[in-house]
Length: 381
Image (cartoon, rainbow, N blue to C red; front, side):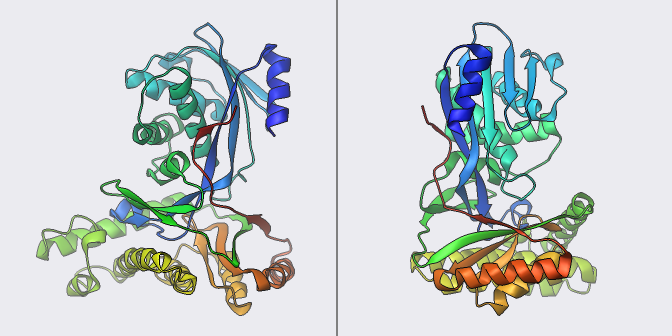
């Protein structure tokens, strides 16, 4: 991929630039906990975005998206926003740096990626992080990594129209080879945990489906969580988010909240605890407990939070049947991937069974991605 990017850059601009990369991410456990002030457990992966960049001495950006075979040229003022959605990510990063007092100059760039699109591995955060990191480095802007992650998040909010949390950009910037990160979504404190499951593989199975109700369902569930947190707060003023609540506190308000809201809150409170259990298990190298909690998350997301779907439940059932250590839906739900912790000795049999059974049931095979936990944003050349 680097050679293709460099060849295209040379063809377009007749020169050579610097090469930067940022990864996509997985999240081992901690789903729908971010907006409840809870914890997530992401890691950067060995798939991401790569860009060659060189300052061009103008106030214009000339960009080429190799995967799409599309080009865009735009200025650095608010009214110069490009129409192409992919170009808005680059423009947004530049604008967010400018808003923070950074001086951006025009540049030429070619980029490409190998993060599968729509599979929940956050190709958009990888793209934002690549340019935020690169411009900070090339122009010696002195922005800390923490702010670089926020620049990516603000780009999503202000130029793409997605009100995302900080996890994706945080993992892309702060990723560390061989480690996952426990990120506290309230304080944004983070801690690295070694993740080197010898004898296991971490595998994503992509259902290749995306159900349409995801955004409205997401908002509805967020509302449920806020309703219950408010009800609990009446008795326990210290409860700011569901992250602060216990199941006992939830049961106190069982008769004052709807049955649906109760179920949603039950899932979140239990999920916060599962993340803590996984931290403890990883410190002991206890991957069986990690896997057990992953299955617990899937059950909760399917039956209590109701954000799974037939295809994801089917993949989870096959994993269980094949003796996979841990499996769950990864991401917001309603499609995308399951993340699976698989013992190497059963890997081939599991993949074979998953592909044949899924095709028989749904008429097409899932996609397979083996992932390795890798470093965050960096300069390559």
